[in-house]
Image: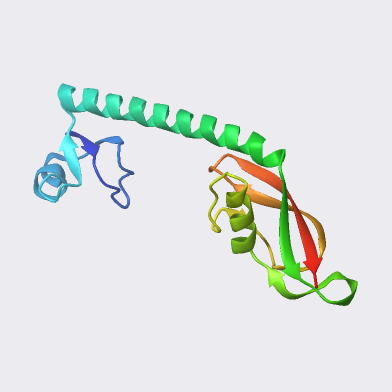
Length: 148
């Protein structure tokens, strides 16, 4: 019997895949537990429609991320922090500080999107990557300004 997997099933497949399974396995396990639906013409058409809608959403997300990437890469973000002699900061500049500075520039970014290997501890210019989408990463120029 052909079934469309509704949920991921270990050792069988991922959600949205069409699989051929034994009739008893489908009737007694997959269908009653809601893991799969019969692969009827109507269900296959619904699956094709949902895949098409998902591809359109994904394409829109990539276009939006590309537009934000262009904005971010043309931006120099200034972060002010207290510093001592030689530009050494008293604290450090974290991903949250950088995300707040970018947000003040008008582009909404969360601290989870800022990929900072380690906190910045000295004043100067840094290139920081911001993950916008699975496929899109923007490099933002960050100017850490030490103030007394």
